[in-house]
Image (tube, rainbow, N blue to C red; front, side, top):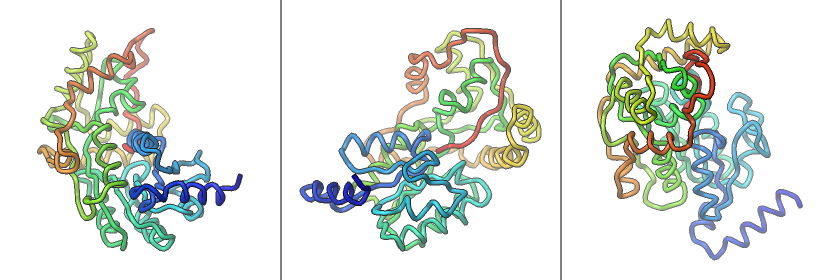
Length: 309
């Protein structure tokens, strides 16, 4: 059955639902990432039509190949705009601006942007979405708690040493479940247009505090070691990360971990009417999955990984 026929059937089936008929299909960019796949799960649970935007999707979507964008936008009414690897990376605003313009021309009515708190490039991403002509919502987040358990810092936790260029900056660690809840609400509900939701956890922690909490709940010795951005970039390249990417990630982390994000915000409460998930609860849930269990000798501290979507 062709994609066009399937879309027609979906539209006919949805005529009885105000939410579905209003918003149609949602494209979730970085749809296999930490926040994206959670947004997808929430939309699917509501039986809403979703298209996963990724290089392995059907059709494929690649932020770095604009020729893939228009086909991915076919029949789409709303988009979760999560730039890969991060909205704070150089060039993100230009790509997000070009994509947003095309999306509006293709009939997209609503854009929900995942933005990085305190990153100057992410602020430029916000501006181009606001001026795109679409209904817009900004979901502004900081360091995602799941970075410790989903690819990015998992091996470092297992090795017992987490080395980052974050100094002793305090951070209101943000749970990916909260981000997805807010983003999904903005995509499918009314009342969120023109809102900027800063999604944070309920308290400030340093990375020393965060790693200590993981150590406490796993019963292991794990320590946080602050390093310079140069040391961090060198470690990344030694573990196979391309030099240019390593430098950009190190620069971004040095930018945002200078204390500018050391404050709480009420985005979860304003969007959902409830409080955010605490980091201790996240660690409890993650530890129960066994993700940090060490089954062999430590493999080294490893790189911090990439991406926040």
